[in-house]
Length: 271
Image 1 (cartoon, rainbow, N blue to C red):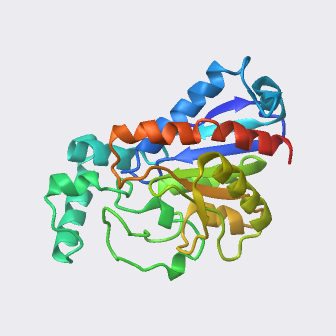
Image 2 (image 1 turned 180 degrees about the vertical axis):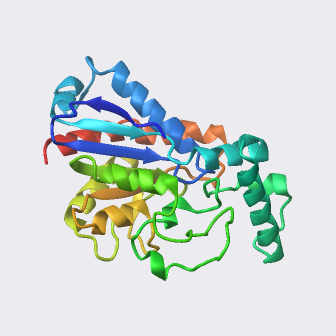
């Protein structure tokens, strides 16, 4: 899992932008990589709100995590050929058989895999965090979507994000998902509700996305908002068509989100 850090790591202010926790949502890594490219390309020439990027990067650091579920993305894009492990391929085939048996899908295996949200072990990573995890519906077996895992943070990808949350002094975490053009900012027990709402207002003003409260639980945003040392966080759902999204949607997604990374960096620098 790649973490690309731009800015002053000793500033005490850190911003995380993570994407593709769901396999079939692979428009979001394109977005985050383009944001990273823009940040580097305009490091010495760009500005936000009249403040040069170079100055903002002295005051804070942005951690870009373009793809936190690479196995899931590979499965959605390339099917079984996207996975090298025979054990994981067997897990995926077993998940398909079980979902067929339970009527959760009627698609061919090839088509079924294009809709894969989970990781390589058939666990929905954004249902795998310790935020109401025990109250989530237990599917009971790996699946393309909806299986919360054997325990909270049971998956290596989830644990990596949990560990990273404890590594720095985070000003905020921005989670990119798709689709719907909405922003989730709240969760029951949110200890940083005011700050998260402020972030949602900021990003909504740029993207035009409407805001709604989260209710599901088990998500990374939910967990960071209720942990002992809570972190302001929002989930931004990009795109107006269902996943996997055609590349034609890029011409809509990018203009809406081009400056979001700079806006949240600026927010972190002034809070």
